[in-house]
Amino acid sequence: MKLRLQPIRVFCLHHVTKEFDPETMHECDWMQIDEFKNKVMSLQQSGVRFISLTEAHDKLQHDWFRCNKNAVLTFDDDNASLKEILPWLEEQHIPAALFVNGKYLDGKSYRNNPQEKYLTKEELFTLVSPLLEIGSHGWEHTDASQMAQSDFENSINRNVGILSTHPRYIPFQAYTWGRHTPLTDRYLRDQQIIPVLVGGKKNYCDTKYIDREIL
Ligand SMILES: [Zn+2]
Image (cartoon, protein in one colour):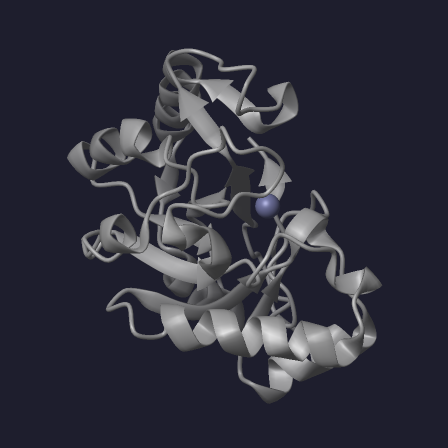
């Protein structure tokens, strides 16, 4: 039995910007940049160390004793607004994982409305800092639990086909809205891809899933 394990908290974020843009953002997916910085710094002051998702997963697999408090920052949807927050994280030497839908990297496609701006493929492939990791969010922003299994598998293959050529690619799939089925989980595990949820739980030693909470 594993003893005295401090949990690893994994936070799920979307837009972190100075100003809220109602055209392209939802309030539940947005955090004001100063509020974000204050939260991150107050966690650090309370002894939390920010680590990469890969390091977190490694610790969940192997730690028999964990007395340090660790946390991970993750950002979904490859929004162009990432350009506002990534430089600050880099300055602070804080790692982050980005979960990307390959479809929108073409600079033309969009999820809900044509005003939405995403990082282009060119921009994403210039993000090669060792502090960053790039995981999959599916080819399109679709609900895995509502897809035919073959469509889900194609969506993963197509997305991973592009993202795995990125030097900072990591084999993790953040399910959109955290929705999944036993079959989608099984497919990911067969592909050695780790499923990432948004169930609000802290992680102790379960390596079948990484769970996330809202910051
Ligand atoms: Zn998403």
